[in-house]
Amino acid sequence: DAMVIQNPRYQVTQFGKPVTLSCSQTLNHNVMYWYQQKSSQAPKLLFHYYDKDFNNEADTPDNFQSRRPNTSFCFLDIRSPGLGDAAMYLCATSGRQTTNEKLFFGSGTQLSVL
Amino acid sequence: GEDVEQSLFLSVREGDSSVINCTYTDSSSTYLYWYKQEPGAGLQLLTYIFSNMDMKQDQRLTVLLNKKDKHLSLRIADTQTGDSAIYFCAEKRSYIPTFGRGTSLIVHP
Image (cartoon, rainbow over all chains, first blue to last red; front, top):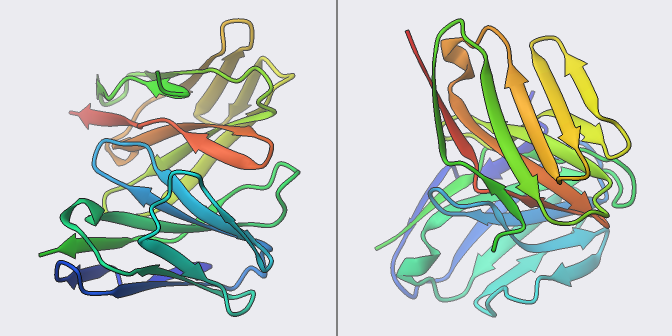
């Protein structure tokens, strides 16, 4: 059974129209991550939560926001998507930050911007 | 330059061994990982190695670590068509993993 679930698998939005991607987990993990992955590029960390503590990467655009209402759910909000935001968005979880905790990834949401 | 570097493509014949190489920059990395990504899917952890180890073997997979040269490799023995995927090297410093761009492994008959 999938432990990190992302919905939807494919999302199409219009230029400038807000969009929300969702992630849920059944692992009860403390840490949840959002990565952006473009073709032939490394997954790029956008931000992560350690419990309710939000950590934004320095180069993550303000256009990207996140919410974590409880342990199980985390959302990625893109306020005004541009063509350059078309990518695969990966959610991941891990149990603790300071030990060798593996990351568990969802299947990703492929975002297209028209 | 990038923190974690990998070559983009590797093509092998079914049944041969595959060796995917990676270099990283941070000597304080405690763990180094190999993840596999199949088309349209998320990343799946294949194996990892602690920085005080030189080698780790797990069935068909062998990880070699040269800490002096900051070089990590993944060897897949008896490569099968089902091994075709993108393989990501990652280093973990503090608590955040940093990924390479991935190596596309193409296995042909």
